Amino acid sequence: GNRPRQDFYGHGEVSDVAIKRKLRNRLQDEGESILVQSDERRSDSYRSIKDRVDSVEELKKLLTKSKATGTDEQTAEVIASQTWYDVRAFGQVFAFKGAKMSIGIRGPVSIHTATSIEPVDVTSMQITKSVNSTTNEKDPSQKTADTMGMKHRVDFGVYVFCGSINPQLAERTGFTYEDAEKLKEALKTLFANDASSARPDGSMEVNKLFWWEHNSKLGQYSSAAVHRSMKVEKVKDSWPSSIENYKITVEPLEGLSVEEYDGL
Image (cartoon, rainbow, N blue to C red; front, side, top):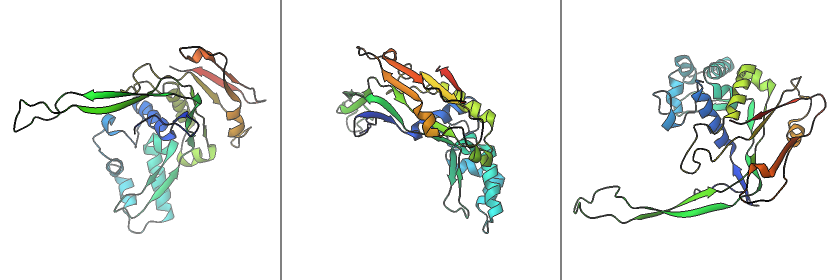
């Protein structure tokens, strides 16, 4: 029913797909080449992923090759990863109708679903469209019937999501340290230029970003241990609800420093 997502216990959710969409949009705003673009904000003349892929002639030849070898698949993976930021970051499946070869690229950047700290209230209101979408050809002076609809919103919620970058997969796709820095900046400004009717400008913000950098490929601690080190707790109840009611802390992990940033 187009309502904001909630889990079984009433906690709000934002899917990892939605977060990646916002990241792609922010990176696209910064001039990065993005394969999976929203049609309403595309920066080129291509109307589909296939059209965008076919615009890279060498990649198109490989995907339509009748007898593809393992080397061809690796070459196609390298070309796609070098061409588009989101492919070398999040990965992509290239499987199109009529293509002789299908490849799947695993990206090093993984994003979790964002979940609210507490259950959220979803407010619903009835809206009415009272203008004519079309003219009645038989009687142009006649007004069409009003159309009723519903609009939903989350009044307040503190959401947390985690992620990680896998160095081994980063080497395979060519995801660089500079790419990671661009991702960090995109996370800080996640909701910039992302307004809509359901989330008007200023209604959503990134409050805190924590960034850990290990000194080895394997990692000094598991991703789960790092994620658990961040705590968000409610310290007071007051109305209206505010981020000021919450205390956000990080438990230190020996030998692993953390960078803390405020959102935009």
